[in-house]
Image (cartoon, rainbow, N blue to C red; front, side, top):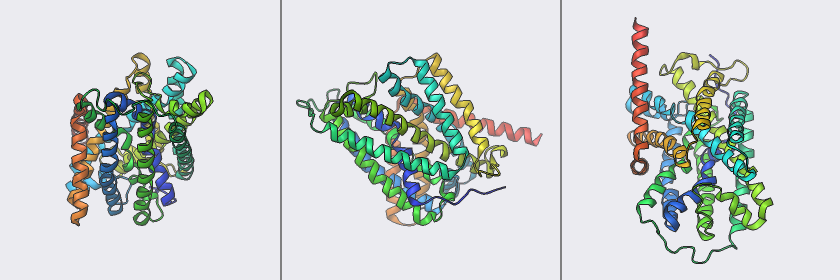
Length: 417
């Protein structure tokens, strides 16, 4: 069995983290949460920006403690044993296979709305984006890392421009009424923001491919955390300040922010760059997920078929091929019965929140210092609160666990017979 290449630096890690975390969330959530909760959505953004620090820090501690491709599954295995690690694998099967096509549909929604194209072209564009992500990741981690670095530059240019162009266009009385729909929508917006701040764990799955994981992983996560918090909070603030929301049906808030300063040309540029940003998040999700499945198969928790690497590119190509099946399924379903924005966000978010609950519990169990235990406990509390605001979507992780566990028992019965 060949091994993964050790070629990544802390800059590559920071780029992967930014592209994983700051994807479609920056495109839709500032306007969507303001539409839900009014200016009070800024409270949700501020709290999430603060509370995500101990969560990301804990994931960094865990990645240093266990720098391997299995990521959260490995952390949970060390803390609670093989059975719980197997549950992590089942939960992951409900994340990227659903979240990546959801992100592609959201990104292409930007393009189709701007050009007034039909739904067919949006689905076709989403399919092309997913095919490119699978292909580039299959061809090796060096190309994948260079792609991630380019996406980060595009993200920073777009978002900084959106903030700068929007600042002069202050709306009359932008902060009143502050909570027009009451305070419950602030909690719901807080839960949805989990979608905007997930993705740190994907860097942990690539830990085996860093030159110096114990040195580089903390630097990568710290740098990405600073960039992400600053840009997210800036866009949320100018969205409220300019009253660029009321867009629940379209969700093209970021393009409108840029359009305030540059008109239709600026909005076009924002749409095209936003498409590039969407690809970046999909790119990193696919990269991290493939390493997780490879590592779980290597450990015997998933079929051994996925434990083989391509002899030349040394990537888990079989995982990329298998991912094409759920990707096509989600796109086909959307073609027959289009998803709402809330559905595209809520269901994958529930899966990621469940994973973070297990990761934070493992971080608390494995931590040797009191401060590390406090950080993990803070992340655990944040995740539990967010899950409570997702409604029926919170049941999705339980359903996946039950289905996965029954499938595992059936495989054991077949193997014994």
